[in-house]
Length: 130
Image (tube, rainbow, N blue to C red; front, side, top):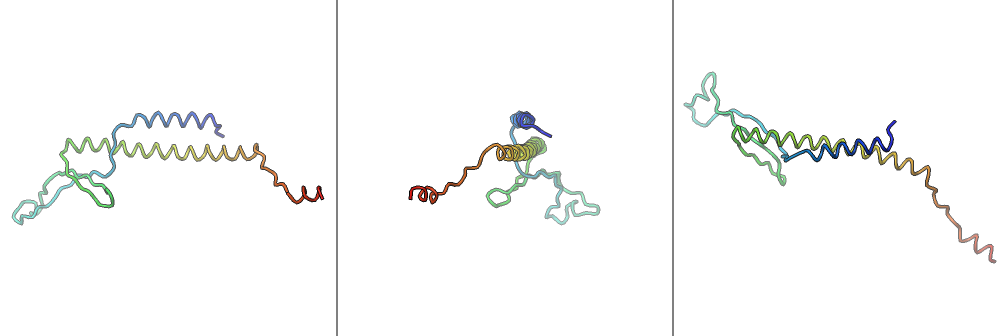
C-alpha cells in the first residue's frame, strides 16, 4: 500500500521528467510515394515507379486539417518533436492518475478525522426560554 510520501516522491520524479521534455509538436508524420498526373510517366507503368518519398505532416488546427510537406532532414526533426509530444502526454497521464489516487486517499483519510458539524435546533432554545 502506497503512503503519501510515496505519492509525493513519485510525483516529484514525474515533474523532473516533465522538465526534461524539450520542444514538441502535435500531429502525424508520414512518408508517402505518389503518382503524378502525367499518363506517360513511369509512375503509371507496370510495375509503377512512384515519386517520392515525400514527408507529410498533418494536424488539425482550429477544426481544419493542415498538411505540409517537408524535406527528409526536416522530417527527422519533426519526428523527434512528435515523439516528445507523445512523451509529454504519457507523463501528464501518469501525473493525473497519481494525483487522483493521492487525492482520493487524502479525502478518504480526512473524512475519518474531521468531525461533521452537528445541526442545532433553534426550536430547542426557544422552548427552553418559554
